[in-house]
Image 1 (cartoon, rainbow, N blue to C red):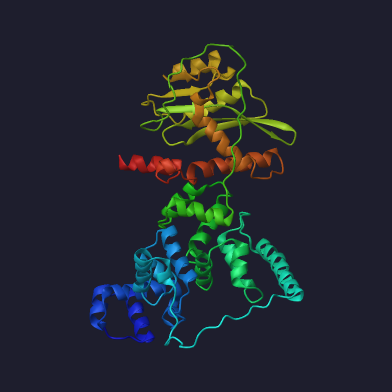
Image 2 (image 1 turned 90 degrees about the vertical axis):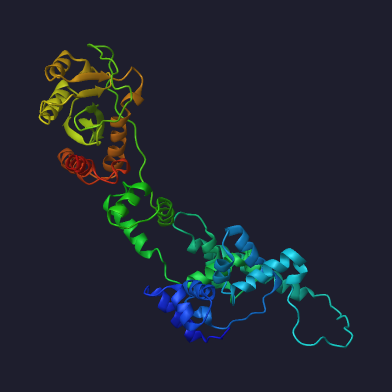
Length: 449
């Protein structure tokens, strides 16, 4: 096979990476096997043009074992592993593996070059080390043990966890002062891991753009989005990425979604008539205005209490309307009901589900529903899961809005609440809505029908 200089290899690799030509055509033209060209490309992707510089090839036994262990532990192929460690060719690693499996560990020990000496070897007398030398070694060891943790603390990742990358970085920075072997032992990482990360230090971060996008989305939604919703938003922006990768990057960046809180209870015993549980936890609706759920939740601000009464459509999770007041009076619910009924056209077969709060047991409320031909449904006493969707909304709204924002006054709170409700309906995407907001999903399905 013809030999190729480094410049010829680089030109061939760049021709392929430009995307206009395939493996086969380039390999055939320059007279090299396509697998060899593929290996050049792999090496270039890991090391750039440095991959083709002639390096030190007298590999020690520990190094060979580190490479083989890396391949076994990480499940990488021979070609991939050889490229990561920048071996001259994939056949080098294949040969090491074959020798180890057929002839054992001794076969991997490198042989001395040149003719063997005819002189009889004489054992060198080893003089015991003196106290001064031992003291110097002890001082160096203590210096290393003191320097290493300080460096690690400075470089530790954002999530507070010391990664193998952090350890490799510290070893790399201290390599001029101390033995790499001793540093690796102190760090508790194998040589292969260290050399892998050393090779990554000079390479640009391939996820830099993705990290910036994830941070922008997280900040835009004020920390409300977890990794699945961020994945959906990335797809909306035509950026295809797996949710596990988004989760990993968010962990690296120290980004977390918020915790949900409990709701206010309005049950005061039987003060009117209790309706049966028609909904029976069937939270799926086939069309808008088929199933609505409602409840009341409480806020405490500036030493005052506020009560919020929304109504939610189970078809798309949209908040139909809401009312807010300083007291949980019946008008809070009746006004909300009047506003929501304006949404109806008269052709719907609607049911409204609530808990057994005293507002919903009132004769006036039941009469208003009956006049509109609306079926009333109530949760069973002590079964919060019967109305889980509206409770889930309260948890989201409190964690994303109430506990995240600062308010100057009650009026300011009401203004910001109106903005959040608009955001929730029009902008906040949901995975079960195919990555769309509630209103966008409703419009999309109506247009498709």
